[in-house]
Image (cartoon, rainbow, N blue to C red; front, side, top):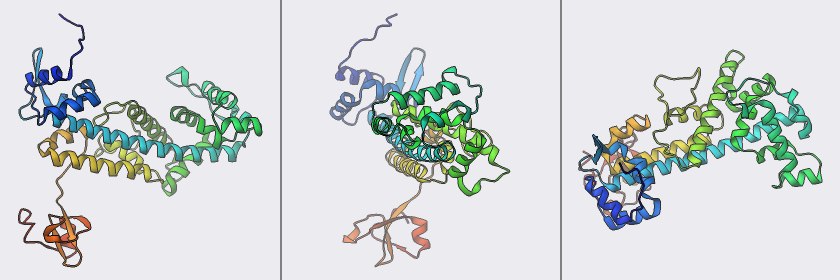
Length: 351
């Protein structure tokens, strides 16, 4: 059996896919796509929903096109970018709140606020993430980093406040650092992150919920940053206490845990991007609806959008019907509820 991997040209790759019954709408454009993104990234990463395996051979389902697989690749690409933006936003927010708590409780001198007695020690599954090693790593950043403004504060002021130093550590270190907070600092963090929903009765549950949330976000951030397939990813972290039977693991659960924060922009960024990406894909490939639902964990339904004209009180399927100027798009039932009537010219298929 030949286990060697051989170089193939783009033309040979296309011929191989055609021999497996994959069809192409435009081979010239497909060749450009393969040269841009790579055969492995597109085909090996996103073909599984569309192939039939028989013994040692595989072939593509009837009527599946290369463009369809590439569209799934781009759907994942858009979701990945949105997750990165969302996680970076959350990360900045978290750094600011943590720095504020540390400065308030332990001061601005890293030699004092990084003292190990300020933090609880606890068993962790990976010895690399023990309390003393995390604190020592942050201390090393303070004393050795040449990045600005850390270097400036060290040389000019002799101290590095937490709002400066925490900018120099990665998200994983920040999450593990928070893990070792004692109750006073942990409770302050929970109240600042979740707001008025926190009570003396539920704060202990939020302790585990926050920890699980941060490690879930860290998983997604690292996967997105390294270009991993994300639309059907199921994280390893389990969300304790707040597991909702109607919220499936994967992207729906990520949206849910982000929605619980008082600061809503990370959630709204991801939510809007998911709506746009899923709408674009399912509009182009409506027969894929059930497959996408199974992969992402979302329940999707077709929502008819129309354009409204406030002057005529008509809604239109065509934004530019008869030269009309429609500037707002609404779901059709909402348009009807607001008193708009169907345009008889362009809405015949909707009636």
